[in-house]
Image 1 (cartoon, rainbow, N blue to C red):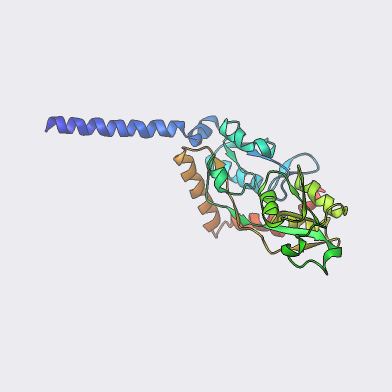
Image 2 (cartoon, rainbow, N blue to C red):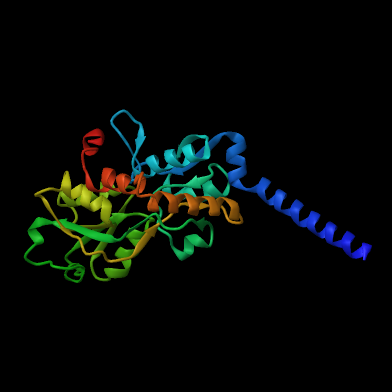
Length: 270
């Protein structure tokens, strides 16, 4: 009997020690110990992250990251990172989390883990106003005489190549360059995320372009973290649930209205 009790105590001690070691390895534990949440993002995706006229990074994800850090009781640091290297930057621990309007995809999920989606967007089309009488849907644009622009290396490019087999496709390093190509008449249309297109149409594209606003795709956006970290993932999902469900504070709803409904902030970046 004593041997059984001793074996049980040893087993419990081993499991407890394992839990302690797992916690120490968690990114969340390191953030708390460091006193700083380090966030990777590409500040060029309106309205989620962008630079204002003074060079400060602002946007939906920026406000959410600040709120996240406040709930952790730590400071926040933003690390501007090129999109094509942002996952590699996370994996090599240059930052703790990616908060950069990243669409949750199966291929990305093989490299990183995602918290639950914080917003859902889709790919839509902005096009020359002169095409209004000819083009009513994406299908009408898939002809050899049309040129479709999009951003390189994002889900917008994937959707563009999926839906347009006949049209000429051109890619750019930034969504702003792709949209400008349409505005200047060098491309017939652009495929990109719905929030960006809505905002572009309320600004530079107003009265000059047409928005085909029926989404071509379903794209949930999520925060990415390194694999093998259940403690951090658990905290993030609980934080997100609190932000969405707390109807007294209404932080999530207010953030949505501030960046995705109201366009006053455009004056700070244009």
